[in-house]
Length: 125
Image: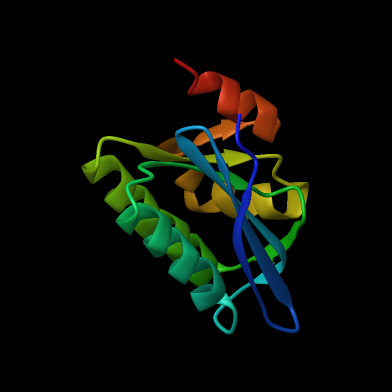
């Protein structure tokens, strides 16, 4: 698998790293995903979808907070990815973030994995 870095974006409260992993792309937001930082995640997700990566794995292991704006970014990416025949997979969610998905019912529309490795293995041909 190619684990080359594609790029990263950062504000004071959120760092987003992107790497390719075969036919999937792994996006790792670290910090707080909210109204002020949502575009830092939206833009790389949109860029990856535009480049033809329909299968996106979001590594949530370092995501400390996610509000409704962040949730909407992920839901929007999910719709675009599914329209392209792929999907958005969430991996390694911390309890505080998982709770947001549980409360809103959003966990039912995402494929959730314990780890990035499990998410990537799930999509292996």
